[in-house]
Image (cartoon, rainbow over all chains, first blue to last red; front, side, top):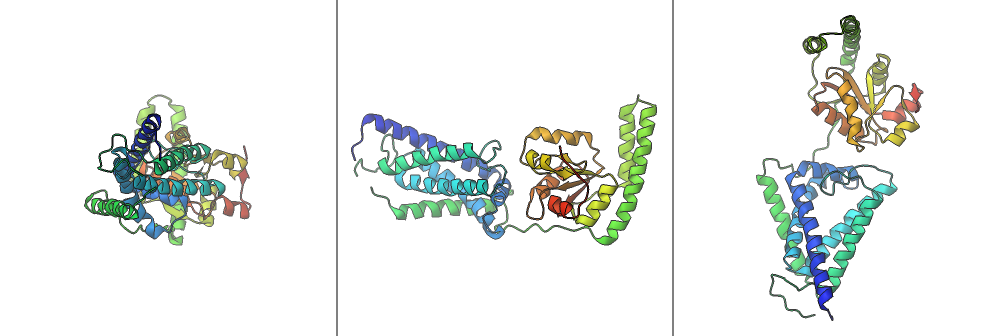
Length: 149
Length: 202
């Protein structure tokens, strides 16, 4: 795949932005597992028994993949992981909107209600993720991956 | 486009393991299987003694109010007195208690304060007569109403009905803020409507 300098820099930026958002989101949830567990429960999509498993593990996946993405290690794989998570989260938000539920999304930072704005933000991040999956990003990466394929 | 699924599984496996280990070691860690929070319903025997107690307390507070009106000065001292008296009388809950429609209506007739945990538009469309609105997911400023309440007062929180959890969350929150006697009216708005109990709109 032909990549020019401009695209390379854009991909690097996308990597850093997406990676940073997830590192932040992950760290935020890790510091307060109880509230993330509550946030998942608010969506009323998962049975109570398995909520905590995801509340414990998902933030670490966000953190790990986000960090690896920033450092350019296994960019495609990590983008795919993050994009899949984003897709599920976005779906959950959309379903809750259709069901007319109204609560804080439990995404990160200060409480923000679910709604169109959240969907928009998630959509933009999804686009970044897809671009990274398709084009990969090799600028400033800390792995020994070749600039091939 | 080459994507190594092996790497994906490795990354996920790594992250999940770290997460589980961290949670195990973390003093703030949460149980792996979430406990279902079961509502403790107020028993009927408590119900009778409770209504008596309310009558006493509300009568007292009326007396104190009139006393306050007579001497508008020394207000802060009065408030402290209020608190001291109330503490000796009122047994604090260890957690918010759930109540059903019968007790909720009894409390309503006693003039106990009701709080509607739903969103403002739902509240405006109709609510229990005299209820205050504190949307659990809404603007923080709604919570300022609580400053006007005494911590010893009985507060009943409700929301849409049995399929809504807002009243439980708000009940817990209010309880943690120091309100000693918080009830969650589990049947909520739907049950109130079904029974044709007093409502209002605004």
